[in-house]
Amino acid sequence: MVINSDVGVESRLQARGLFGRLRALKRFALQRELLPRYAVALLAGLALAAAFPKFSVAGFAWVAPGILLFAAAGCAGGAAFRVGFVGGLAFNLAALHWLLFIPVRFFPVLGWLALSAYLALYPAVWAWLCWKMFPGKIPQRPGAFSTTLGVWAFTTFWQRLAWSLFCAAAWVALEMIMGRLLTGFPWLLLGVSQYQQITLIPIAAFTGPYGLSFAAVWFAVSLVFAGVITISPPYDHRAARCEIALPLLFVAGLMWFGFEGARSSKERGIKSRLKITLVQPSIPQTMIWDARESTNRFQKLLQLSEAALADKPDLLVWPEAGVPNLLRYDEHVLGAVTNLARAHGVWMVVGAEDAEPGRDADGKGAPTFFNSSFLITPEGRLLEKYDKRRLVIFGEYIPFARWLPFLKWFTPIEGGFTPGGKAASFALQIPRLNSAVRISPIICFEDAFPHGARDHAGDGTDFLLNLTNDGWFGEGAQQWQHAANAAFRAVENARPLVRCCNNGITGWVDEHGRQREIFRDRTGSAHGAGHLTISIPLPPGGGGRTPTFYHRHGDLFGWSCVAVVAATSLWSFFRRR
Picture 1: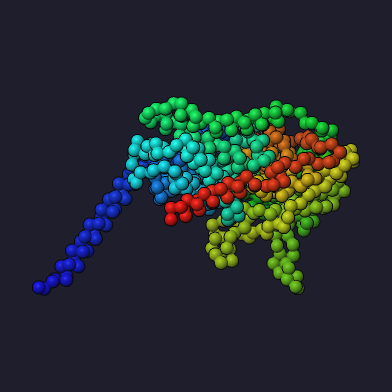
Picture 2: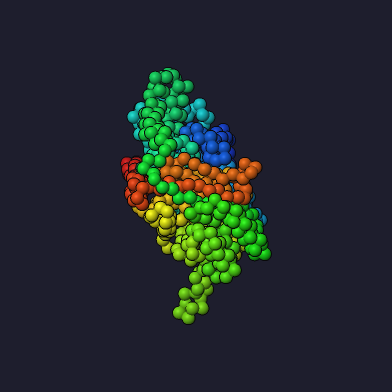
């Protein structure tokens, strides 16, 4: 018998083609089934963005994570990841829309899309990991929501409780990674959305913002559980109430803990205050980049300062990038600044760029540039300096510029800064107080890093001072989101935090996280030019403030969540093997 091999090959190829078309149809059908889930995830992401400034609807943070997880209910593997990614992308695109206001071409859109896509990976991993660890039976295909509600029917109350706690810990663990990986970007930590909830944020003195992130996710997941049990047979309303009882009691406990501190509006044991004048010049970023405008903007800053010094403060503060050119090397600028301090007998802290000569043996190497703040005495001497340690990627330095020089084409900067070495403490001798006042300067978004700001709040520090230039982003949500982060740094370290900004939000936050004063111009805008004089309470006898648990031990809670998630995931992996 003769076998026609050509016919066999042809039939096999036809079969492969048929199977390929069937697989393509299956993938298409699966994607269509996921469309309702993508829509729900999209709504969850937008709700999560609305929990942050400017909308600041804090209650959405206690619901949106649960809705996002519900959108991926019953999905396994890549489907859950994609649903989480859609929700995360919607959240970050909406919350970080202010990146589009940077006054340069191309880069804002590219940066907005790239950063949002990167940050969306964290909710995506969270949704995938949570459903990977779900203790019950999960359907093999996503299907409609009505077919996946039954996944809860395969679990007990204690399994659901353990899983909801795991989901909360996983969220915190991913926030911990997000705040450190690739230099870190802990800008939109879930707990920060609660910055106005004065009875809740005192927990940050123990856990940082991660404690509130944990509580919000636990509550949101339990709330979804309760809702599903309510609408699914046998409609057990009593079980639904039990589902939400424990996280509700936990939140009530947090509120009770914080109520006493929030209720007391008077500083106890305060016998002296430091009078500070903050100058907000509101200089457009395009003018800062234009060297031809250096003289004009510097004269504007000097005029505002002369008017501000009529209040006779102990300390005058200028924001980041307030001084044009290199302060130490420009005789005209240096003379004007030191003369201002001498003429009024006032301490000054100013933001300015600095440089160090080349470090080659012959001294002819390229100079090293820093984003710095300077302490100037009433006698006009430059006494101390702090160099910014955490630089803004593509704003203050270009990663891999040596190997990928074309990246410079997409950024608004030509060169770059070098990070500083360590935190600094500025000591001001104020005769009328009979003691030194110690200030720890922070520059720009360094106050968005819980673990970074902790390094600045030494035991002798009276308050933190943030100099920032948020003029890159116009007048929008970015400035208010930045101020929300600052409130947590004050609570975590039990130190007031004073902010002097180029175009908002200038003011100060007390150690309880309360926004005490905010600068506003004659039109009521927080972004205009002017000055604000504030009075900061100081501890008696110059003895400093009592360090918090967070200040002493750092992210013990956050790393515990990382350890729990890692251990649970490894145990599950080996158990399935």
